[in-house]
Image 1: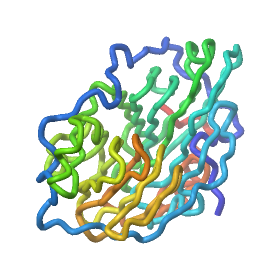
Image 2: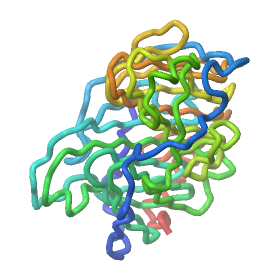
Image 3: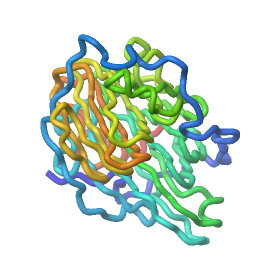
Length: 352
């Protein structure tokens, strides 16, 4: 079954969104990797007693396509999107760095509905402007995250910000879809604007303690967008409905093995945003925009960069053991619930 990309909209034009001016939430933001906490997540060095996660499969980068007129994306999960093998994650679109010239034309995707899941947008370069039917309207910039819980229903739009549209420049971002369990699918919608300066950063621990001597402090690090304190020594910036890990990892040093803690039993997905890595004790290579899918067993992910200044996104989480019914912008548990979502949208009952 084919599913549209992240910004897919139904053809019916929804009512106008609330006209509150956009707030530039990212003022006074710090650099995404400005600093790291003094203590690493867990024991430094070999992480004694830990078991490495094993590779299940490596996926190559899929072809890119345009979403609207502003997002040239890799559909990272490709034909694995909306399957239980990636649960709780549903879909992942990545807009690799692309130069946009100044323009008076709005670039992005207009109003469209969602129900039954969450969308997470991470800005790396440029700015993204979000508006929705419950009155949220924000601009995020490099390192910032917007975490939107559609739940029972929301109508939103996403564009390059007005400032970025007029000045142009390099644009890079990603959007993830994260499932909600049945008990939360009809909760009220929620919006979390997360600034770069509010995302905790912890050091990346080398596998061999002796390697600490050749590493510069703060250069190899993890931004904990989502994750628990027991695992990472800090609580991730986002509030989640189920146990989820979302880590933005920077590996400045090449040819050094690092261990990243990930809870046993969590589905784990490793995406190479920039550079290249090897994964697992087998040290299998993963190239730019490639993905490593890991087995559920083990509580440590082993990574080594084969290029300096490699950047990786790690998505993990406790699987949601429920049926997945996905069609267009709705993700529910049954076909009947999808039909109801369409009826509610067509009758103007969604997004309130």
